[in-house]
Length: 388
Ligand SMILES: Cc1ncc(COP(=O)(O)O)c(C=O)c1O
Image (cartoon, rainbow, N blue to C red; front, side, top):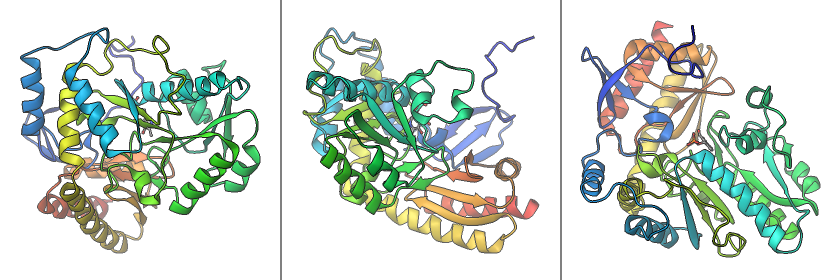
């Protein structure tokens, strides 16, 4: 008999009933150090008092307002995002997948309105992940995600990760946009080199194609800059954001330049819940905390500390781990052992990590993890590796 929850997830036998900071607790009191943070969602930890306050204060005034009306919390968050980024305008969604949907629509509408409706192709890269909608799986293109779900949304051109020569050849007069994660998350914590992002910007400019960055996982302070592309000193035309921006409350966004967004006039897109008062009240507080130089400096300091300790862990367990990679607090341990076995061994020691492709385990702790918890994290991972 089918389970009452559609069985699309293979879940660990763990049931958390509460959380505080970087820790989650089961009903029997057993505590786990959460280095997954809901896969980069709980950017400011569990039950963060400032976020609880933002949410409950909003909840006491108004929960939902249709986008038929002005929503002050939405305006506040949009203004903060425009102020701190390349973007001139923002559309709010409830998830990263919905952000992907709009990014694709926006790029195609841009060219339609420019009188070049044949420019519909979106170029993407192997190992990418852009969500599970029809556009999201067609964008990623992997057999694992698309098999059985055809006919797929047409108009995606798939290149190998890092294939700049291929990109040069693929950009043509039917290209609408290039879509890329500056640091691949699901693909195994694979940062795109700064030089490649710069080259992509130049290639897109030469061709006219729009450049879309998917910062759903790597954005919102995760790499030690507000957005990961800032390290490379280039900006996109369109950017997808989600996960960390809501700190655990469902929220996503598409950020764009005025030019890239020019086709998205009244009536061309919408969402019942996107940008609702509760999500935006939390999002505005998350932005206030994360988009702060002192906070980001701390993320970088902690990232250095964690990375240094992880290098030591890899040297101590050469049979289990191969290397550390990633950026900021978006780190991956490439494993020699089977990555899911390492994750399981972590559960037994009370530490949560997340598997990714390429036999990697992901470490995406809350950005405000304490130094003590970083030390405990590596001790628990060390115990897990020893147990293997
Ligand atoms: C880079 C990237 N894009 C898009 C998505 C989809 O986001 P969501 O699961 O919020 O729909 C994810 C989710 O893991 C992601 O990592």
